[in-house]
Picture 1 (cartoon, rainbow, N blue to C red):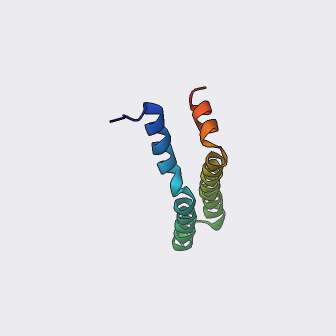
Picture 2 (cartoon, rainbow, N blue to C red; picture 1 turned 135 degrees about the horizontal axis):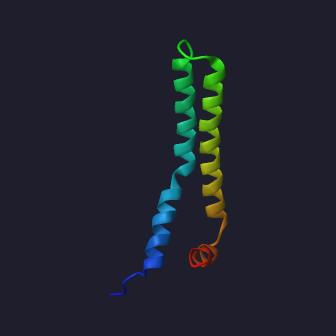
Length: 83
């Protein structure tokens, strides 16, 4: 039986990590929004707004990272992993 190479296994593991990134990060933004709504009576709105912007920005950057991963072909992914 042919054993898969370590590079093949690693590429499949990374692909699995990125597969549901968009949905997970959208849920993270929704969770952050819910937390802002809950904390609104206790914490100043400006502090909550800044925190929400950081949380939404981090989620947005993760979505962009996953999109750039999927824009690459399999050959480009393999080449960049060996660089």
